[in-house]
Length: 218
Image (cartoon, rainbow, N blue to C red; front, top):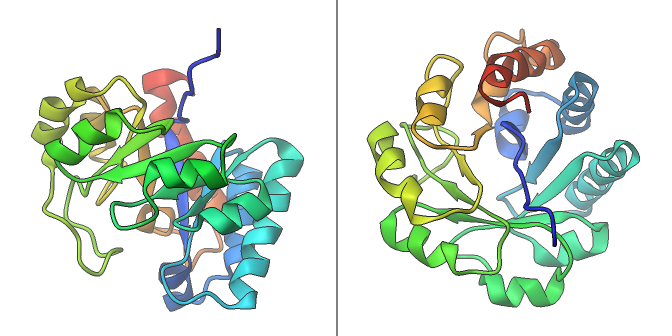
């Protein structure tokens, strides 16, 4: 019997635009997270792809593979296939069934934003679902309506799949979303808060994991 997929409590996302605006090198940020001991890392690039971006993703994928960390490619099933990476897709990306034809043996996650999408997502061939934005966020240009903690409590019973929440999650409100039923919290801007320009991102990631460990030990 296959072992059910489990999401680490802490799910850091390396958003190239967010890091670039703050002049933080993506590879250095990835190395800091891996040194902190994270178990999963997502590479998120929403602008047009250049060779530089693929090379970045390839480098981070290699670092993750070396130490057994799950590397997740956002949106691009083709690149996930090339890099032997997990894949995270959104509502406007390749449908899960089609994505499975590209990355048949890898972990796949799907973004959802409301009751209908979450219900449909439960039936899709994916290992986990994301839900958000939970709170207002600046890391997405055109965010969907916020779900809120109450929304997590309402929607959580609609799926038995691992659920990662995203959007405005901070160390101060993380306990509320976990108690509401989330399995994991995805963090973008929260990686940088108080890091002095990114130089202490390792310390910040360690703080996140200590904060979240009290709820699961993961």
